[in-house]
Image: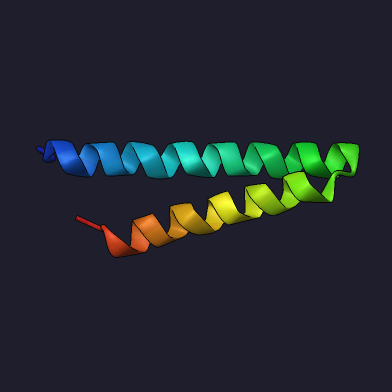
Length: 56
């Protein structure tokens, strides 16, 4: 399946945001830093919104 360049970059951005958000949330839970959990949560929300709004 051939995908346009823009769709590929959006998929990569979604994956990167999800991975970074999950990493920050886990690190925040481990070191008990609520602000890291919060930032990670917002990154996950942004990734979900990009996935919903720009689905090819």
